[in-house]
Structure formats: C-alpha cells, structure tokens
Image 1 (cartoon, rainbow, N blue to C red):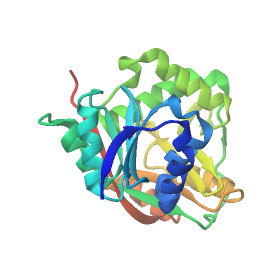
Image 2 (spheres, helix red, strand yellow):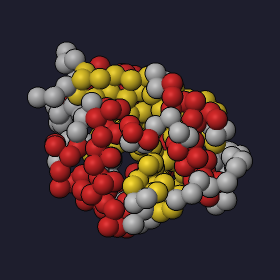
Image 3 (cartoon, rainbow, N blue to C red):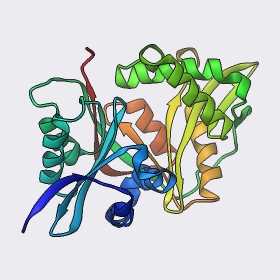
Image 4 (cartoon, helix red, strand yellow):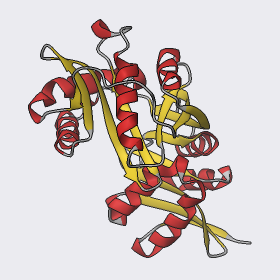
Length: 274
C-alpha cells in the first residue's frame, strides 16, 4: 500500500465530495465551499492511498486551514508538506486531525491559543415567539455590525480582524449583510444581538458569530435570537450546526436551552502573533 500527498485539482472534485460526505454533518463548511467555489479558490491538499483519496485539508493562505482526515496520520503527512509551503494559520476542524496537522505544520512553534470546541446540532424547531426587533440586518448598519464582529473575534479567538486586515474585514461583513446572512435584534436604534448564517446545503446549515454587546448581556437576547433563527432555518433545512468553545459555559447554556445537542469534538488553534 502506497500513499502520497498532493495538491488537488478540479479533476479531484468528485473524490473530495465523496470523502467529505462520509461525515457530512461535521463537514458542512467544506462541502459548501467545494460546491460553491472553483477548486483553485483555495489550496486543497490530499492524501491519495492506492488511488483513493483518504484525507484532505483546505488551506486559505494567511487565513484558515480546515482538515478532514479520518486517519490522523494523513493530517500529519499533509502538515509535513505545508511546513515547506505556507505559514501556519488558524486551524479549525475535527480534534484529532487538527492536532496532528498543527503538530507537523507548526513544528516547534507554540500556538497562540488552543480551544476544545464542540460541534452542536439542532434538528427540532425551538418553541416560543420571535423577540421584538428580530430581523435581517440592513446594509447601513454594517459599521456597527463590523465593530461587534471584531469584538466577538477578540473575545473568542484573541485575534482582531479589524486591525489585521480592516479592508477585508469590512468587505466580509458587508457581503454577509447584502446576501441576507446576518440577523439582528434591534431596539431603539441599537443592536442588542447579532448572528450569521454560514454554509447552507441540503445536508444542513452552519451558523456562527453569535454576539451580544456586554451592556445587553444576561437578558435573554442570545436565546431569543438563536431560537428565532433556528425556527426559520429548520423550515428549509434538516439541521442547524455550530461550533462552540467547551469552556464557554454561558454560550453552551443558550444553545442547549434552544435544543442543540452535543456532537463531534473539534479543535480551534490560532498562531502566535508575529
């Protein structure tokens, strides 16, 4: 039995999709990305064993790497390859694969932060009514939403996208709003809660970016907003998923109160600042 690491091309798209669909619920982001983008939108690396693709990592250089490698050694082999090609970046994915990838890719470097994350899954609409002011964000609200999005990443990741690449950060926020993927609770011209819809696919939907400004916490806005979005999405899709840091007890209480159930263990690793 022989295997090799190689950069994948458009000809490998069917093999990538077949591999990812083995565990579709935990691979919603990757499945959505490969279906919505040309292969060369990112750098796809795979391990091919006797002609069969057995593990992949999507690398968006300088931004993000997402592995799916059922065999952790595949992730380690890809990490060896990446060591010579790309600087280590944010890694998010199934826990054992992410750990193996980082150990070989970042070789000797200490991570900035390492989080135990958990995939959560919602399959039954939460009860209750929408909170007053729950709606899609409006484009003119993007500066406030961009500020809150950056604050969320500073709290959760220790990274500030508004400082590292302000133009890209603003562009991403604006595009999400234009496409109707950001929802808010607004009262008295103030945003009390916001959340983003990420990957949408017949297998399900992934959400993230949940944020309540500190002055408005502890008043049920997060539970009301998450439940309202969950009801809308489950009217069209079979499930809603999200990732949460396992140490974030308040967030977990919100999601579990809305009916989300624990699923696969994930890892999030950030590189150290230069």
